[in-house]
Length: 392
Image (cartoon, rainbow, N blue to C red; front, side, top):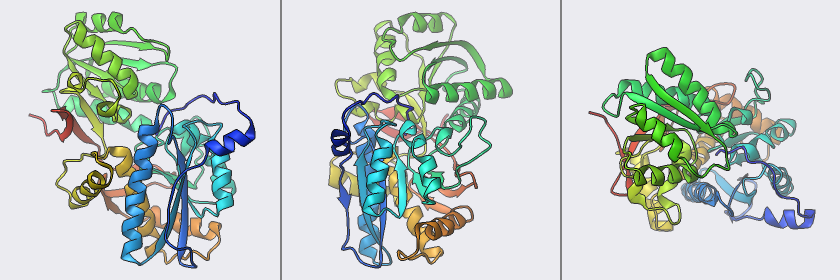
């Protein structure tokens, strides 16, 4: 996932090393065992994301190990979503013997280690770090690292998909207001692509405004959106800020259709938030827990049984990451005794030529840049849960 978080930690190295400690799911180590490692926020404000990724990956590892064709040992480090922590966690994983990476959960942390994966010729796939900086080494996205792939959509693609979806589903609304965070790359990059695509397809944007990370009062923007006649408010942002906006909109009696992106997944588990305020919120995500897809149904049932809650897209993306790696390992006849560089070469060859079917999409493919291609799903929050939205 996804956020380009600024480094705030300045503790001594000994303490930082402790902070990177995490859990592992393992079979007995042998010549047939692959070591897959990753990092994410297992503690702190974004632990919802990190724990979901860890849980989803563990379920996949356990299933694959039980099947017996290959064996995986999985280790997750706590980088707290911090780009100053993730390189330390990466070093810990390399010392542990990591052969394949699950990269990171958030984008800022991921961008801080992508060059390391390239330098060490180690393949990685991130479940949720969606910013282009995770797969591209330059701002104009012409130079990819080549060793880091994504299971999630890149941020700009979400903006394009959102504009196209709203244009095709006028039952949601036809006049759009947009609020985005100007000092957050995730929010800004989605907004820019959304705006460009909206102009291209003729979607009517009647109001737009920005805010910064310290903003807490959105009543002024919401009032202007209401006055503009907006019956849709597009929120390309994370769930913590979206929760404030939903609260304040409800207090002023403004009830448009709210449409969010994958960063809003998690709002239903936000402590202290009245989930009734999210009733009717639309999200474009790669995963719907109520899908009839057999892979999804089996995964959801196991997740609910083991962890007592419905999995979000971060868990599902991690689950798919492990299975995609396993598929590539088997197809490429890759063995754990190979050097990381050889494993990476063979995995890249498989990922750029294979088609994958998982819980977050069917007919999933990857470009040589590491970007994924799959169709987003629309879900709407009803009675406190996500349900698939087909439109009217």
